[in-house]
Length: 234
Image 1 (cartoon, helix red, strand yellow):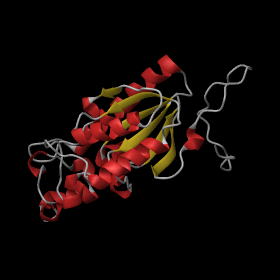
Image 2 (spheres, one colour; image 1 turned 180 degrees about the vertical axis):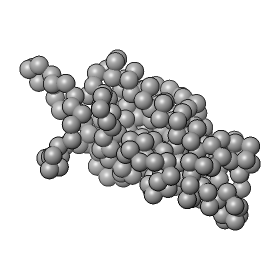
Image 3 (cartoon, helix red, strand yellow; image 1 turned 90 degrees about the horizontal axis):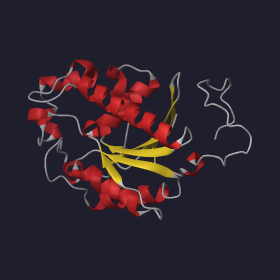
Image 4 (spheres, one colour; image 1 turned 135 degrees about the horizontal axis):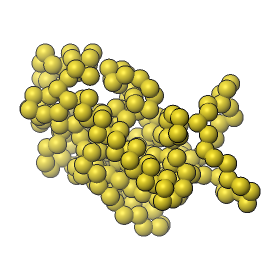
């Protein structure tokens, strides 16, 4: 199967002011977030990406545009509603320090699989539709471009945390243990048996993700086996 680079959007004005942006309108990258997105685009510019998919929200679109702009070969931006931010409902646009006083806050922290936001979405539903989106795109990319293909999905912190939790085989109730910083890159390779989390919350060099040059010999099928003892690395 293909490999997906999960890119969180750069820092937004809401992130900087401690507001839960949710699906609110007009939330853009601040100056630092624009620079973060630009640097992330530069770090993955040399990788042979075949698809660039984004949440439809503006801050993700801005980040995806930075990824596309850094490339010498044009790459169109696709959007998928399933990668959008969690529907925080009545919590949208409120200060996090005030939300922390709400009874639901403790549920979101300690038992997120039981959390449904008033007037909004459950975290279970968020994870289900986001994982479905990534797996659907991954199958499509693999079918069209081959099992060694790389593609990007630009999304939001909680959404990417939930996708990583699924790939790690851990319960959604553990997803708050995962950290996904603005403009970070996390990488998952899906195989027939299991996903492999290749990178996580990465801000460094990503050149090692580039597929090795094709050999003239018969291509080996992608393996679902983990390297016993840890293997030699990329």
